[in-house]
Image 1: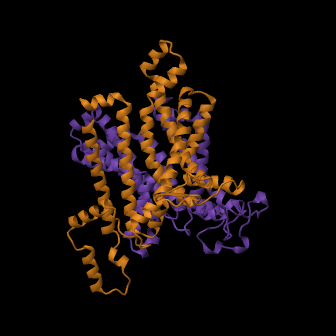
Image 2 (image 1 turned 90 degrees about the horizontal axis):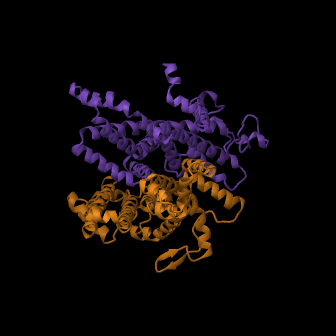
Image 3 (image 1 turned 180 degrees about the horizontal axis):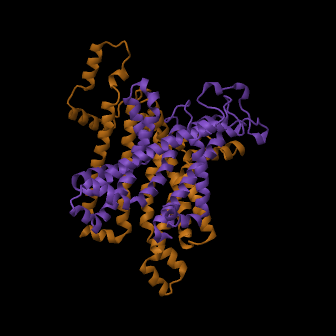
Length: 324
Length: 300
């Protein structure tokens, strides 16, 4: 167990180093930081001095080491566009994205798992066919179109919900949360549903596939032969064995939620990290792009490690294998 | 040849699948219309002469518009039908090119990785793993962002379509590489490949002439699904204002422009291109699903 966790930690450090290297290469080779910081009237001598001060003349590895060491200490440099420290910019945006992603993930699981189980148990039913057809259309509709449709229906036509921005936030020691006020929830609903709908179809399809696989397996056939009541059979024996893939979904969907939050945040002008990333691409604000990558990769690594540890807790077979 | 095609499994199942038939008709209509845009569109949206504020904001004909503009006009007085045909043309061009590049790159690397194995295989697959962890849209955004930093400003506009196509292709190649590699592992040990190798044929010939035709089925499915993904990616990036500029209207750009009219009464400027995009992608995905079923008899 300890060995396994240690192994995962080492792997994670390598992944983070690779991403840090990518971010560093962005800084170093895409655009010239000195020309970004200075105006046209800066003399060549001054530019050269700045170059020396910033350490841009040092050997490559020294620069990379310094870059990584700064990152670890939370020093992410300054934005080319706003001249603010990037760490502050990112920190102020993280709560908005994580809360949006969390609610979207919840929607996807709470609706997707039962729907997947249902369609797996009644593969030939009319409702199943209808649900499957809907999900095929759901996968094909781009996230931004779902967002536009929701804005049009609930914002413009019905006028029930706000269509852009994040309001009603409460500051909890540096973390601004939408969860504590009605206004916060009202502005959260549309973006979260937009983000959740696409993930939901994926959840449903994966749960359905797993559940059908389990239902075909021998132990279920034996259980049927033994006359175990179907209710217990479905929900205790079969569903318990689909829990591992469900955890996998949570891990996989985290990536999707983060990526598509860029689109959702743009449609709803939701002030999260995705919107910041888009702005930084538009203005070629390399420091912000680099730090966004590193922060996202960090969350990826963290979630994947947690998922792996959950496997160990849930599936006893894995523990045995690790011991051997 | 024709009779062989008509008697094949694919056609047999196609004629018994209403969803696939409808999807094929829709796809053929849209793709045909886009292909023929310069000949069937009544005006060219790239042409400044087609701007006419006199004809601006006309509704579709069933809402009392002008018969010259069946689906109405936008605020510049451009015919919506023509804009959509040209927009779909650009979207499809980028999508098909990106899919083709991703196929050649992915299948090539996958075949080579599976055939030679060893260190080359390890490197390709590690890159694929890392990229697979990042969703395609993030990869495409990143490549686009990097290109903005690397290319001089003067070339930016001219190379927009090429950069966008490449960004999409580079975010989609992984699926092809993994499928091709896995198929090679299966095929490599079969007698017919062994025989070809013993006969001293060139590895390239073994891969392209013997292995590739036998793994076409799954690749065809991925090509269809990825064409839909590529079109979606292009539309999304253009919608976000990262992809194409507003003066080269792809479907995504048209929807982006239409968003300005979300709150006003001119619904057609937003919804006509949106519905068009969704129809195109849904029909391609339905066909992809159909192909998957045909090539995977176990599911039938």
